[in-house]
Amino acid sequence: MEASFCHIMLTYSPSDPPPSLLTIILDTNPNAWALLAPILPLSAAIANLLVFINAHLAFNNENKVAIIASHVQKAEFLYPPRSTSASSTLNGPAHSNGIQRNGNDSDTEMADGDDGDVIDDETLEPLLNASSTADANHYRPFQHIQNTLLAALQKLYKDTLPSSLTPTTSIAGALTLALTYINKQKQLASAATTSTNTSIVTLDPSSTIQTLSLLPRILILSVSGDLAHQYIPIMNTIFACQRLSIPIDICKISGDTIFLQQASDATRGTYMKLEHPRGLLQYMMMGFLPDQTARRSLVQATAVGVDFRAACFCHRRVVDTGWVCSICLSIFCSPPEGALCLTCGTHLRLAEYGDKPAVIVRKKKKRKEKDR
Image (cartoon, rainbow, N blue to C red):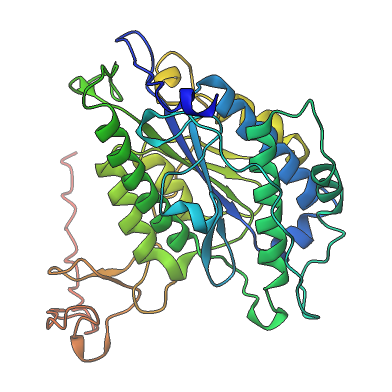
């Protein structure tokens, strides 16, 4: 039975939409989730996320998903596991190279942590108990993703020490991992569809028609605050996604960040700041489930106003007015010492900045007396 599935190749007609690759970046900041626990516990958020992932995979047999954790000092894959991310990856029933086969759906062993745990087992206990019980009615690819994700999350929190906690997370590193994974999957998909027909989809109605074998997009579930110290790497990843036509969707559960709004606006993604975090599943199903093909026929929710302020390169503070280097376009909140650019070392000409302006006394105009 398994050998016969290895020879099945799925072909697409011009009317069929191409498969979608959804890369989810999950903000796993322990401090932020601890503050959000009375409104939306982490276990409830993960349960809603799993339902959303199952719906995404059910739309198309060839849809794929990847989950990346944006942790306090690092970013790492939660799904697919590290052992299988370098080879052909199991994403539900579909695989790279267009081949469908059965994978290893066995449960992942839970790693034991030390005494310096940040989040205890009670946080994910409801989901761990549900996943440990074998259910014959549970779709095996969905169960495989659930078990792998929960095991990776539990190991991630057990390996996190209280001394390593910071207010923000490594969003820039997670976006870099997402771009590398998307690039690899696009190469595998294009190689698999060389001899098959691919559908024609136009991402922008005003752009030319281009043939695509995989539609990638990124979804960020953020609960942390300001990311000013990661301004430069975040902007680099935004420009890369903009060039590759990869939309970045932002689901802002709590807090507020300026640069995530700019990322969604620059890549034509969807930005939603949740007013009621308890309805996380409804927000995701209605706002982030449609891919690029379906969004051309839908009216997407957009942000009313986007804050386009930047962060200075010297102190990483968001500024309204600053000084810009004419060579490398670096931004400074105040003139650098010695009038030298801190990035490229160019001598900046500040003209007569700082001098006392000359005050010219305005001459009084004589009023002409009207003849009586």
